[in-house]
Image (cartoon, rainbow over all chains, first blue to last red; front, side, top):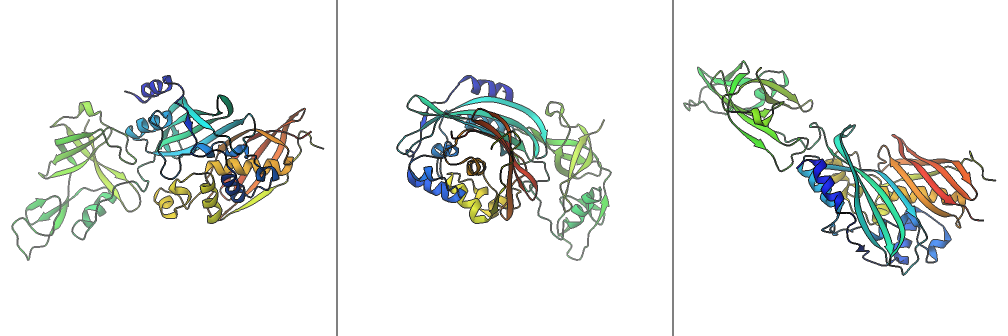
Length: 288
Length: 128
């Protein structure tokens, strides 16, 4: 199911059931709020709640959980699955129909208003999700809000990228990828990958060097990763074990390929994905 | 005398870590990026930052400090721009964009060192 189809299905459910606030409107929470904000309006000390607190009464709290039928939670799960793992609030439009007073008990319900995307933003590719929340006292609508969040996939250079451990034995390999070279460890006449501290024959006096691979090879085996979500990656993606022309096998993401066209024996060439100044990952492209 | 074009007095906030944390908790927003510096940095932020419910409160205060305690705020519509991190200074400016009877629409901007953190409009019913 596409993001659009999932959104249409969630929106069709309409308003969630009304969720009663943990506490009635009370002076203690108002006092905390006016003290933190620095608001000295004297009405707020006499049982009138600041209008901007409307949303506060029904916040989930430290260990709170979203209601089962909460459409925002459902939409966040759909986008998490699709690889859009980060979220940031962008817009809030609140209307207040009257003041709330101490002792009143509000309940909130939420509906999914719209989902727009995918859009390119400064933070990465993402979807704008708009919900409408309504607050009631009994059956009286006292406030409502359009709330928009951007649910996005941070670019691969974000701190979410998985990093290899670089040791003295593998340093030459990662220096190579930075320079745009695929370097294979060589012990005498024997090539070896992944590189290790010892030659295949166990000669303790041997010292390795390396050769630069042509970068040409064929897919020896592969997996298509559908889930879970991986920071900075759009799902699904392909990881291929490639048999290089030089005879060793090497792992990397196969980029720019439709998973349906990938097969064992597919000719590929090496490419390099720069994550940041310290790290460049080897990857593959289909040879055309 | 209030008229279209009337400028509101500036209101400045020192956004200390205590301010970021106490306002987040007073709005019952326990997202770690608003009180845990290490968590905020791990998620790619420079420091902890203000939450949107606090922006609503600050914008409301900016307008009612000017309009008086008897004014009734009908709506607050805000759009977030750059983040406002702990250690910053946030300055609110505003002007009356329209006035019909006792109902004023005020355009508001909250600016930090990185630029416009919050922009929006507040519709307020002024006291008779």
